[in-house]
Image 1 (cartoon, protein in one colour):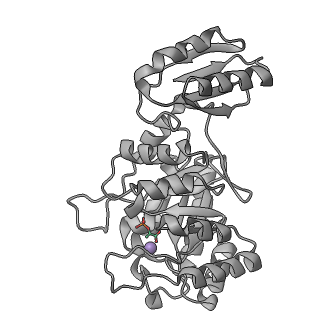
Image 2 (cartoon, rainbow, N blue to C red; image 1 turned 60 degrees about the vertical axis):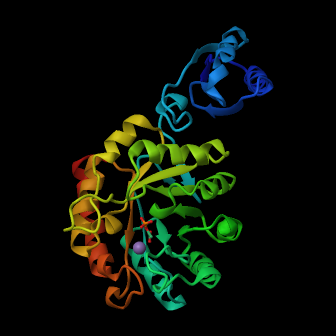
Length: 336
Ligand code: PEP
Ligand code: MN
């Protein structure tokens, strides 16, 4: 149920409604918009009849039932689009935000060089994985805390915010002490313990769609994070598994407008893991901007032929510069 406050409702009236919602056993999630405050009352839906009573409380305009199973992620529960602030980089606003960097953190030199390249090209956020969820236990698993320390050094020297993946609830406290944004990878989209843990974090979360998750399941995963108290979630479409084998995954480009109609959360595209090949990354990135995504996360490596993971899909520096030039031209054409 959502409770829509009148636009002239006072702070005291809002606080009183929140207290009342909690007194009848629900959790209150206020969303303070420019015009008015909307309060999501989330809990066991079997007895939600009682919440109708909120209509007689001072300052309340109306109550509305949200029929969708994702309550806080749904458009109805929030006025306008959510803008997620990642250490002053705003995702979901007018700017098309580019996160770029290597798949894995490999060494200080490799990470510093990557940061230099992506910053020069105009990227806003540096990516790099210290904990790698690999299909094979024999593949490189990431530099772990040593990698996080490199990330911290490069973050300071390049003055770029960083996004990095966390794969284990026990590591969330450590990873969030180094990162500006926590990535939940495709394989962990339904790791509910991990979702609840990052939901208790103050850091924004980049939530990737799993290769076998529906859009509704992705939104339910976002709901785990939101309902645990973290309102800063960015959704990422990174390709799903289909019968097609010509690409690593199939980029579900239609997920962007579908998600945009269902949720107020920002949506970005990862063309690298979708395609699996660097040649497809620029065309898919153009499609991402044209279809209305809020940004991209893309793999870039100073020497992809030497990368310890995902070299085939990583852009060389010149290709990254080309991508950024093309995006600037496209932004001017589509008036983004
Ligand atoms: C990654 O970003 O390097 C990664 C492992 O991505 P995904 O979870 O989308 O496979
Ligand atoms: Mn990768």
